[in-house]
Image: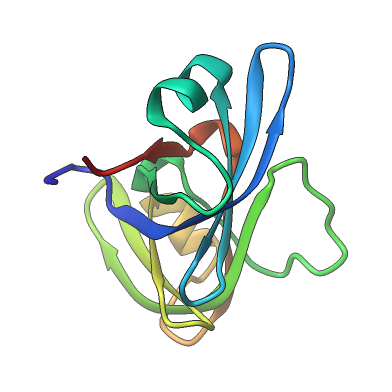
Length: 142
């Protein structure tokens, strides 16, 4: 599979909570990271999603927010992945931020250069990748 989404998390479905129209799908990676997605019930059916099924969570870098100094902050976003910034590449308009998670995976975020500068983002800074569940796409192979 070739895809432009920068963040690809492979794992197994560990949570499946159906609702009237959408379902909450939880994927746990081999490293233990958990990603929550909200997908339509029709997608659950057509993809054959069930507890234990291998799946892939995809997130575009532009859908990832970067938060620092977030202790005590409560968010409605279901995915808050804590780690350390390993790289910041600044362009004229935007910046790409790489956050290494404690289990070894990486998250790529694309934010404005102005935000990266104002937040003083650099390698070594503790950060959290914040991703809304509605921004996560679930895929299966085959």
